[in-house]
Amino acid sequence: MTFEEFKLEWQPAIESFLERVLDQQAEGPAEALQEAMRYAVLGGGKRFRPLLALAMCRAVCGEPERALPAACAAELIHCFSLVHDDLPCMDNDDLRRGMPTCHVKFGEATALLAGDALLALAFQCALEGGMSDPTLRVLSALTRAVGVQGMVGGQVGDMLFQGEEPTLERVNWIHSRKTGALISAAAEVGAISGGADDERASAAARFGAEVGLAFQIRDDLLNELSPTAQIGKSGGSDRERGKVTYPAAVGVEEAGRLMLEAVERACLVARSLEDDGLLRDIARSAADRSA
Figure (spheres, rainbow, N blue to C red):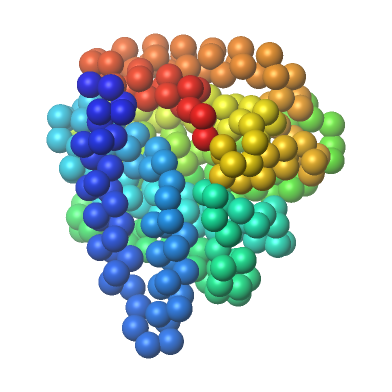
């Protein structure tokens, strides 16, 4: 099965799950917050992280639906991070997925609270199966991906290194946390949901980390080389802001080489997981995407 075939089969289930949990959230004055949450989550997106989680669960046990709560928790965390990253006090972006960012649409305060609520909702989703040992392992993986050693720490580095010399060491430090940590966790929680032991779950996390690296390098290349209309956000904005990116650190050609190396390492890990080809196609798609 190709990644595109898998996406066509399973993305509707992801969208349905997200719709359901977002419809449960608010009444009265909080309805405005719910609207902002729905806008941030349901307004498009590749659903790469939850699809990766479901695919990894399939590789482990053949039943992707077992990973839906954990997979959608990862997607909600991702959406929370986008809302907060776009805020004026962070990246101050006006465009996301080809539409006004959440704070432009609803105001800065509502966007801030919507992001907070999405993070809380993510952990509610992860707990749908009750407090079993696999659920605790899923929560552990997701919380590591969010905190100081994950996305939040990566965002701090992204801000502090802005305008500094763009070295490979710095860009690796930022993006192994800001992007790679959650993609790695998505693969890991998919494996855990499928019943993987610690060894296989660790292999899934390694696969996700390499895919996350390829995904981020491709993102940097798209920002550097593609028009705004293609990528749904401001093209060239990283360079204009002095962001530490892979093209800035090593050049476009070398960044492309590093991306392909990450894909190859991911494919090696996939083979150790007895992949039937889907995981390797996911790894390649992280480097081939056009938006």
